[in-house]
Length: 481
Image (cartoon, rainbow, N blue to C red; front, side, top):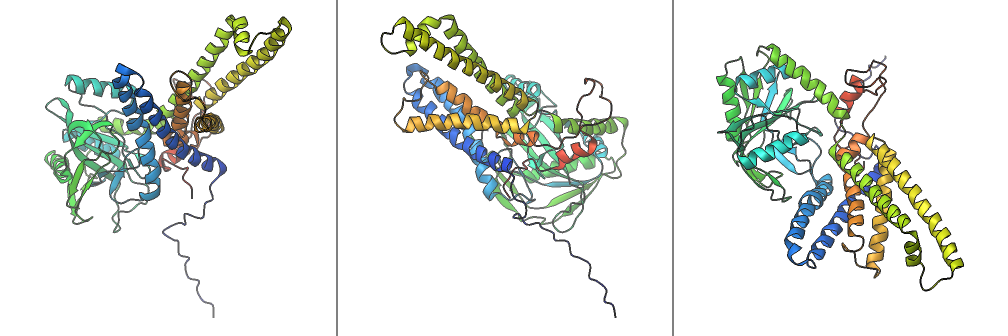
């Protein structure tokens, strides 16, 4: 008698040990940690150098704060949180430094067009994307106390990616105070703990002032501790808009708790999770257009060159420019340069020999500058191997400088090689960042479709599947497994 085969059970979890790390992943991980250690050394050098410059002490302390707040502490947090912060849903968003951010206090069901229509009818304004122009505008608006209704919000991460949309309400024309809420689209088939199916998760908080982050010392918005008040405010505005919204509450979805977010602000919540049903909200043409534009913008975001990559390339170009200046100045006064490199008095024959040797060395140095510049161009256009090569080259220079420094060599200062060393450390920090390596390792395909308007013929465009894969993939795919 034949026995029916039992259906094969599909495990709900996958072993983290089943995916060996590639060599580039190992290099990325080592470079990431090495960049953090190098940043600590740079901060120490800047601090010790400051005591030798008299009235410039204040300037050096400002520089030390910048290095500490925007380079050292974020990198240390990222290294440590890779170890101890869970990489799965625990009801909290994460900051770009890996710290636990704002609590997830809303869930929604409906399309993006319905979400946009409901939020606009409820009196909310969709926030601008974070760009150099919008960032500069929010700085000037805060300092001059000018209204900026569409001010961008800082990125928080859920499901390995930053928010898909954000809305806000400014308070009395003061950009330092605002209601705001971030939305993330849930992955296909994803369920809340307990089996509830939703399409969006959101984190709503109220910005009460601008101040310093407790954990990174960066300038940031400070939020009100009681996040439940903001959660209830968002729900009440949607209900008052009378656009067909229905709300159910998952009581005690999480335990009530007191904690701190990634900026060090106190937060508290009762653990309830309102689920907002938007499926009956009618969609107007503006909402449909906003949703379509947002989808196209997210596809473009997967291909947009991140700021750390651009910064790393600029630093490499700056190093090339400094090298070219060194070559030009010495070639213009070649005789003095040769004599300065040859100890003691020399005969004309010895000087000619030295001139030949130094000429060959200078030529090799110039060729190296050309190759380094070509490497910078490859990094700029997204080559992953070029990024790894640039990091490795700068790391070697840092190691040689550290060995010489620890072995009793000349002290590192502004009078010798502090600026050059700083450039190499910054290159490693920029190119080993999460955003830089994720962009260099993103899925890419060549599309046979004609180039879209605004691009040259034959442009390389991602197809929709590859772009969606880039958007849905974890923001950091280079973790050791």
